[in-house]
Length: 304
Length: 265
Image (spheres, rainbow over the protein chains, first blue to last red):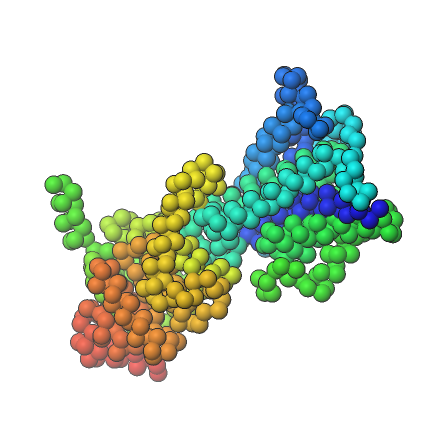
C-alpha cells in the first residue's frame, strides 16, 4: 500500500517536475510568473496527438505497439514534433505579446496579466478545435506489473519516470557545462550586466522559451499518455507546477525536479491517508507554507 | 602586400574618435558638443570635477546611452547606432566604477562569460558539433585561467563571485573584459575605494595592458595616478571639452584649477 503510494507519487511528481523546470527558468530569466505555461503542456499533448494520429494513419506500421509499451513509433515521433511545435508556439507568444511588453518596460503585474490572457486564449482555442471531450494516444490497455513490496506500475509509467530523470540530468548538464547554459544563468542573475559582458540577451531569452516549452511538451505527452488529453489538463497542473517551482527555489533546475517529486508524493499521500477529494488542496497548502516559511525555496539562495 | 598596407593604415587610425556628442536628460545638458580621440596604443586620462559628464561620456562611448547627436568611430567603424554588445565586437571593453559580478556564478565562470561568439551558445550545436564546442570551451577556460593568473585571482577561481571584495571585483571585471580581447579599454575610476596595496597592483596590470598595445581611456580623480600613467589628459567641465595636454601642464592650467574650485564652491 505504502509502496504503491510512493510509486504513484513519483510518477505524478516527475511530470510536475518537468513542467516546473520550464516555469522556474522563465521565472528566473524573464522575471515574471508565466501562467500560460500550463497551456503549453496542453498544446503539446494535442500537437503530439495530431502528429502521431496523422503518422499512424499514413503509415499504419508506426502504430503497432513497441515491446511492452502501449504505443508505437508514431508517439515518440509525435513527441519530438510536439517539442519543436510547442517551442515555436512559445516563441510566437513571446514575439506577439511578452517581448512587446518587455520592450515597453511593462511592470511584472502587466506581464502576469498578459500571461493569464494568453492562457485563456490558448485554452479556448484548444476547446474550439478539439472540443472538451477527453482523448487518448492509444486505446490499448496496459496491465500494471508487480515491482517491489506490492507496488505496481505499467511499462509506460516506468518509461515516463526514466525519461523525466534523464531529461533533468541533461538540462542540468546543459545549464552548468555549456556556453548556452552559462549565458542563461548570466541573464538570470543580471540581465543588464549580461548585455554589457557581450551576451546576446534577446537570443538567450528565445533559448529559454524553447527550452521551457520543449520540457512542457514532454510533461504534456506524459500526462496525456498516463492520464488523458483534455484542454484543461495544463490548467489543472498549474498549481502543482508553481508549488514545485517555488518549493525548489526559483532558478534551480534540480530543485524544481526534486520539489516536483515532493509535490507528487504529497498528493499521493493525501489521497491515501486523507481522501482523494483533498488532492488538489495539497499544492495550495505547500505553496502557502513555503511562501510563509522559506520564500527562497529549498534550493534557492536568499535574496536571489 | 595589401594586407601589410592595411596594417600600416591601422597604425594611423585612432582606437576611438568621437565628435559632436550631445546628451541631455530633460533640460539638463549632461554632455554637450564633446569630442575625444583615443590614439592607438595611447594611455589617455579623462578628468574633470564631479558632474562634468565623464561617466555619461563613457556610457555613450560604450553604448549604454544613445547620444542625441554626434558620431563615434571605434576602430574606424561608426558605432553610434550599435548597442553595447555590438561595440564589444568592434574591440571596445569597459569597466565600471562600482563593478558588479554575476554573484552566484564562480569567479572562473564570470570571466568565461566575456568570451564572444562561442559555438556552444547555440543550444543544438552542443550536440551536433560537440567536438568543436568542446575544443572552444576548453580554449575559453584556458584563456580565462591565464587572465585570472594575470589579475592574481586564480586561488579564488571556484568560489562564487559574491565573496570577492570591492577591489577584487574590479580585477575580476577587468579579466572578464579582457576575455573579449578588446583593443581599447575604458576604465572608470579603477582606484576608487581600493586599498593602497591593491591599487599598486591594479596600476601594474593596467600598465602591462598598455605595454601590450591596448589603448586605454581612464577616468580618475587620483591626480598622482593620472600623472604616473597617462601620456595625455583631456579635461571636461560642465559637459564640455575644456582643455587637454600633458598631465603636469594640465594640473597647472588656471582654467582647470578654476573648474575644480568652481565646482567645489
